Image (cartoon, rainbow, N blue to C red):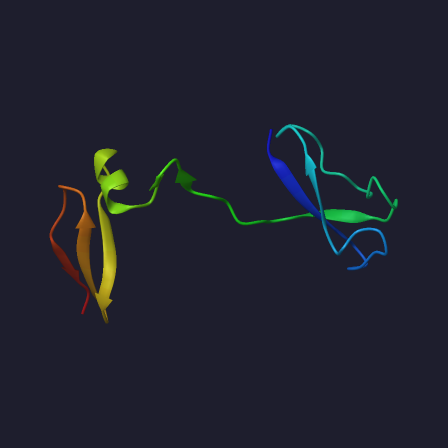
Length: 94
């Protein structure tokens, strides 16, 4: 089950340090009030982790092993391939 972050609508609370986390199923409705203080609250969008084990899912080797092609910006309108077999080695938009 994912952990969702919430923040009080007022932006502050004496019990909660500006936010709290709740483990909920993905199909559960978002909380409307804080379970500790009862203030109105809303779900906050938080960062997602993309790492698995020792590697990183968006690392060039990982992307290439899954059949993806990746390009990185190398200059103004100029992109170089960093992973993958398909597509050109360089893309230039001029």
